[in-house]
Image (cartoon, rainbow, N blue to C red; front, side, top):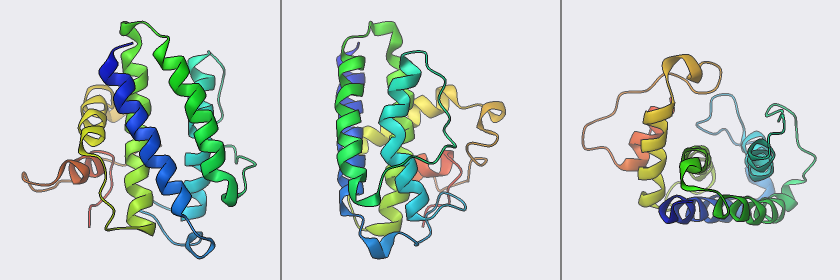
Length: 175
């Protein structure tokens, strides 16, 4: 696996795990930029993501719509345990598998942005993660495969930050 893909995925996992660790009980019902999702919905999804991506990498069928049985107080713990296993998997893969790691980075980066906007809007996010995520999404997200997953791209100013460009590509309206 290319060093850059794994390094960036590791940073994306760290970033998302840290955000999950700052979620408080009074945040759970707050809305997020992910249309129709509260912090509770997004936290459930994000906490289960490394395990689900690992399952997919092993050829398993994964139900992304299933509600995980993870208490909000355990989100960060579960996320980090599954993240370690996911990283170990990607570290053992050949270079031609990098697009899978990059799409995982993209998913994590978008949802980290969503969660940060809801619970800690001033939080600085890693621009290297956003750059790689945006490149992966631009390469792999077509109008056909974004239906039901991501809203259409939102237009932003040419000088928008990389995080705002990533959010806009994923159909979010940056604030």
